[in-house]
Image 1 (cartoon, rainbow, N blue to C red):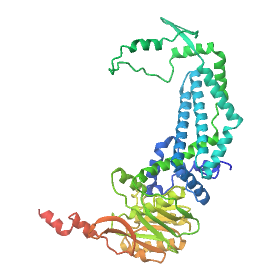
Image 2 (image 1 turned 45 degrees about the vertical axis):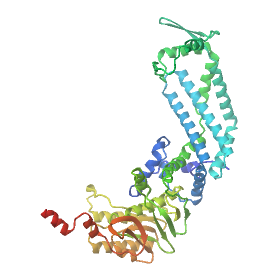
Image 3 (image 1 turned 90 degrees about the horizontal axis):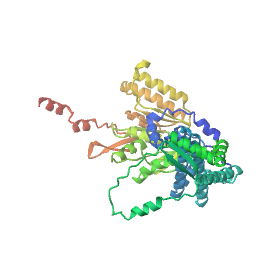
Length: 511
């Protein structure tokens, strides 16, 4: 197998992903919060463009699923995580070498960086060979890595690195300090009195006592005196330091491009699985969805809003999950019910489900069977923008026209409480016209609305209602169930709960 990328079909596709902007649906679906939580711990790897690049290639998504499943094996995850730590150390050494001023100190840091690089790759290859790797991606990478490690170029790099480290370890010298004069000379077998001194004073040790030693700061940058000493040591060992100069000159570009790309791209999987681990420890389900480019019938069991779940778990709250299904010619979920009942959260959860599925990631649901959309369009309420001189109704219509012009039969459209600024009669007329266009286009959709009439508009629409506690209509359950719209807003129950009915207000004013 030929290895090109652990994320994409080829390296060119990965390079194109670098230029992708933030998808317009991110704000409405709160995907930006999710991606920020995933990528922030690995900010150095610049992972956001990968999450801004949804796929519509079922084989490539299956390719990612296979890698994810391999990495869900604890030993495989631990091995790749260890590899990442070794490589991060290598990068820190490279960066430190570039910051230093004195040549020989720079070169020693560079040598140590290459040593970490060689050790990281050898350890990774040995580990992968011993583990049950099943994904096409990791098996192809292992094949590439084995070929690379046995190549003349890498073997020469590894052997020269080990030989040079050994040669530098044999560098011994003596300092003679008298006043301001420092003399550097070869080591001539002088005795080391350190062990003898420690043994002499050990007899005075009387158990645990207060430590009065002062910790000296060990600066990574040498001072001018240390640099002058090192220059003279180099004169004492000209052959070794000449080899160090030549080594660093020849291996400025030692880092293999394919391995560097793999190191970065594998973080996409590691970061996502680390993020999911928090939710799984609290019992929330994730699954690998079944996807189709042709069958629009879709269903999900126990899906939930990942951004809200993150917030609730931090605050010790309870996460409510919901299910939905579109069968046969059903296309649009019409969600009605009382305010603050979880309708918008449900719509966001559905949008997140479809988007994360298009990334080839496990999705927040117990099970899911989804149509893979070409794009996700959203229309959520926004604050009026004074600079565009448009009223709210006009702004709604302009945004909807843009969506309808760009959408295809393969798109997913999520609408949330549109036409709230006009009369009920006008809102119903406009909504029916929009719904007629959506059904004619044959798109999949979720529409949160206060207009119950839309729920029974067509055999292609499915009515879902946000539930309340039957014993206490003022209490929201945040469950959204498939059933006919009932037209109950439960406004009176809320008014009574907060003592805002006419009778309560009169009583409070009189008091």
